[in-house]
Length: 301
Image 1: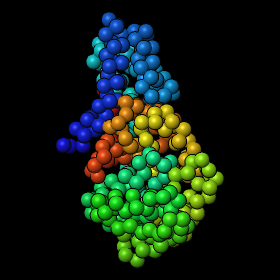
Image 2: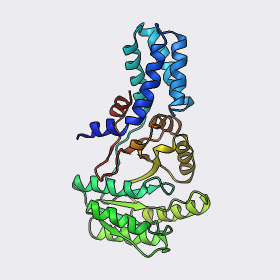
Image 3: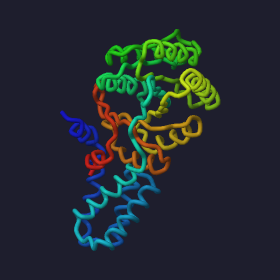
């Protein structure tokens, strides 16, 4: 099964929910008018796209309808797709891994799928021919290291770890030293997800960043926040907290296959101007791919 097919299957709940609402709107209207646009705007907001993104999409749709004299349902849907894609295309969603080694710092609250995301990304990068080293720097949570080790074994990549309770920055230091000595292409660092104490989290991440910047001053670095799609609008508030705490360069959206709230992707990008780098649409190690705005929109409409 190709990724687009997996994506369509994974986004089934979002697609069914979204299309049902859209089709209901069109079935109640015989012409393209202001009332139809108001109903469509309400559908977008109800589909977790968010107020700002929904208003922008409908405003642009209204202008296109007037300009191009659009009068039928399919043309309206085509323009709707285009306007949704525009929001998602605002930011570059390519990973910037231009140095050897490059660093990917993974952040996020507990339970969002950080460990599985690291395993899947490590597997993907290894298949692309990169030598990958994973760092178990979440030393706070019981069993975090063991879970990460299971996924690195599945991905067939190396891991640097210490005992539970060890200083996370010291684990990162050892990993960076190993990466330089043994010529790894990418270092992927797991981190603890303790949002309830933002200051502690901020201090810990700042310390990890200092180690990376000191030991690899010229390295390409991505800081990716993992979000659980099933939380809908709560995901947007998590982005805000981590954006304030660390310099995010991208987002990873997980559990899209278990959610009807895939529309939140548009709200997140619109509000934060941070690109989606990866999306997960399944539990297998290959069920994560680079985010493609066109394919995503096509899969839900």
